[in-house]
Length: 471
Image (cartoon, rainbow, N blue to C red):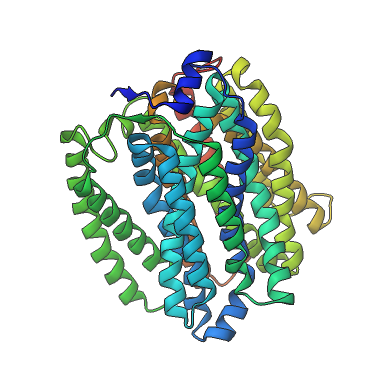
């Protein structure tokens, strides 16, 4: 597809050379990073407010926890769609729509009068948050030109920072104000981001306009929703017969929609997710690796605190601190990984990172060896974070060089596959723990399975074409 040449920013790029970084790129990066950080913090801070939400709005803890689940589901549904629309109609446009929607839904969430309303609002907030990531990635790529690979790699450090800050911010706001402040604090920040983006980025490149693939969007949303419903039904404790019936019906619907969606992607040249981004030695393999990465590495984040409490009786605050240790390990190596990426290529960094994560997972599964429980778990979490810091920048860049005009679309698919893998692993683990007489030991076996998944991804990574240098 051809890319049109808008005036303003694109004219500046033509004068400097088509791949020359733009002057205000670091200012734009900072603004975009704040938006990503806001979405990341909102995902983790709400977990600390669940008891307060339950007490204030009523309903069971299970209903309150849906405020987290539906947020993740909204992200999964919107990422690939927003990615495609960002490439097609301009990254700035989709980014501004996403930030505006996120801000308005934050206001509605902060004013919710019952748990049902809050859950519905969180669906739309998740949709907005999911749209931020691919459009933001595309904007940064446009701004940094030939340095886009390093800028995209640096995104890796933003999400673990949010994982550290989110629970702290949530705890402070709930303790000294109200759970509603977790959402209302987004209002001034959202307004500021809209103004800054409107001023700093006049236009962004876009592909030739084509009709919006409404049929493809409807099929994809139905497929993801039915798939996640089946998975969630299996992972939610309750009546086993009812669970199996719900999962079976949802699974059958998902199978039909999957067949129809793939047929549509193969036949429609303007499909919201074209078939060329779903299959092949590079894209197809990378999508599979992203599911495995999400299942093991992202599922880790939710399950480690529960494991520390169930198996070793560690206090919740200390158990949550393991995630902070992992985040520090991730941040400490991500910068080095970004620096090495052009010299080594993405393949060796991904293999090394997955191998190091495997070591951390095995350590978690084993009982402490010569150290206290706290020290052993901290060491294992830190090693896992180091592996993620090595692998994530490389995996974020893998395959992007093959379709630089579709950066947002590929980024959206990457997020969708990773989050889907995480939800699958968390749901299955939750179901196993609900029927286990020794949940701590059961979860140790789960981490051993995660290690096997990471090792199984290595041959797939090695089968992919490598790339060195900028793109």
